[in-house]
Amino acid sequence: MSLPPEPPLEGAPLPPQAGPAESAQSALSAPSAEAAGAAGAAGAADDRHPPAGAWLAQARGALARAELGPLAREVGRVERAADGIAMVAGLPQARLDELLRFDGDRYGLALTLDADRIGAVLLDDDGSVGAGCRVSATGEVVSVPVGPALLGRVVDPLGRPLDGLPPPECAQRLPIERAAPAIVERDLVSQPLATGILLVDALFPIGLGQRELILGDRATGKTSIALDAIVNQKDSGLICIYAAVGQRAGAVERAIETVRAQGAAGRCIFVVASAAAAPGLQWIAPFAAFSMGEYFRDRGEHVLVVIDDLSQHAATHRELALLTRQPPGREAYPGDIFYLHARLLERAAKLSPALGGGSLTALPIAQTEAGDLSAYIPTNLISITDGQLVMSSELFAANQRPAVDIGLSVSRVGGKAQPAALRQVSGRLRLDYAQFQELEMFTRFGGLTDARVKARIVRGERTRALLRQPRFAALAPLSQVALLAALAAGAFDGLPVEDVGRLRARLPAWLQAHGAALPDGGPLGAEAEASLAEAVRACLRGMAQESARGTAQAAAQAATQAAAQDTAHEAAHASEASGTATATAAEPAPQRAPGSPP
Ligand SMILES: Nc1ncnc2c1ncn2[C@@H]1O[C@H](COP(=O)(O)OP(=O)(O)OP(=O)(O)O)[C@@H](O)[C@H]1O
Ligand SMILES: [Mg+2]
Image 1 (cartoon, rainbow, N blue to C red):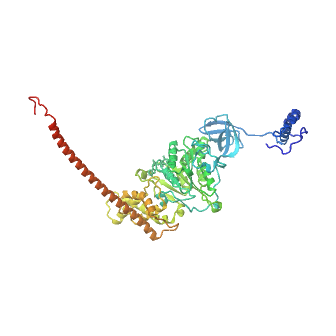
Image 2 (cartoon, rainbow, N blue to C red; image 1 turned 90 degrees about the horizontal axis):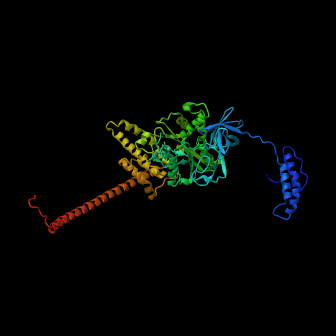
């Protein structure tokens, strides 16, 4: 409460009061008049402290102006609390998604509203909220701190630190539920997001603002693809947010350590609600991650958000819905599960230049059971997103990594954003590779007679070896274009399959050393394509010479070693012989016992 600018004179009669303030005022006025007089005289001598009388008069004036009156506040009561849910009675004015405050400064979120009670999800499930606890509505929705202070940090979905450092100092908060940009506020997806993974960048390109689902069974490399994409943004300036929902704490720790070890954590935010976190925290985690990303998107920056994973999120939503008695639908998920994920992913967008041209790209991950893409959550997510990378457990078991199933994967909008040169050299790759896979199946048991079929199989095997890429071995667009141009030109056809991987690892440094470059933005001319293929051939020749030199050296070394060994052997023999002779001469002949055998 601020004090009035001009206090009334000391001892002046107070203005008449109305309402409940009056009694408080009259109770104050009787003793204060005398005290004010006495203190006023003493206090006048000291300039630093206003006289007590003046202060009292000021306070009286302020009190007179204060609007005092009864304050009605709804206080509800927890009927029962368990499994991260509290059923609350007595808050008829509470609204959906409103933040509720429980005794002991614990918070929850109004998830369902019934006629006589509210199903609230607890955001701090430490067991302190129980039946009989008092609850009040805050009139606010859940919000998270946002800002650059979050970069490089590991936080929970409410922005509280999990990395042992002080809380991030963010000046602003954003609600976790925000409206998706409207159509007029959006722009077309036109800029590429390079993952550095040849298979993804060439066949299923991702554009800034796109939503590409990563879908697959357990342990098929889903997280690895997303983390590779994050690590590859180390020098691109993109801001990356990795939201772990319902993952094992060990797996999350590994993921964070991986990004840190690759030196890419500086522009990353890790939002962690692991499997042990309260279901409420897991539920809000993807929304919180999007809000943190939208802060940067709205300032014209480009953001990549990885949600690992949305099937766990769906399972949490189902658990909460069943506990709050919502009617179960297909696979026991509540009816609003599609809407939940659609309104989340719809927030990924490329904004129009008028709004700064920022973007938010989403890479949601979802897990399938036994490769069943037609289950409820996978089909929902496939229809919400702009494409999917389907991971195959068979390919993973066959050591083909990344184990992306080329036939089932698709990128619907990223093709427009793909660099022209890469689009040019990867044009027929998908079709050729699919045909090779079919041919390979047919010819597995029979002999190969047709030369054309044989050539296709040879090319296909090299393509497969080329698309096999270890983790954190990102390829720049130049190397990708050169490799694909050389593949199309048949440069690898005479190469043993094992050497393709060696070449892929070797080529980037070679191209850099020889000053190769891509034309700016536009497509490759036939000449440039041929010269890139020739550069790859030259690199191959260099490798062959090196290995020939290596073989010759190894042979020479082996020969030298063999000769040295022979010499040593001979010397040993000679010394052995002379040693024996010496020993024979030096040592007295053993005395044979009479009658013993010689
Ligand atoms: N390109 C690759 N090269 C080599 N190893 C890889 C590659 N991709 C993934 N892996 C390995 O495969 C294993 C499983 O990967 P990852 O954890 O990413 O799978 P996931 O599908 O996310 O698993 P989960 O279902 O448990 O979350 C990891 O040990 C990872 O190192
Ligand atoms: Mg994973």
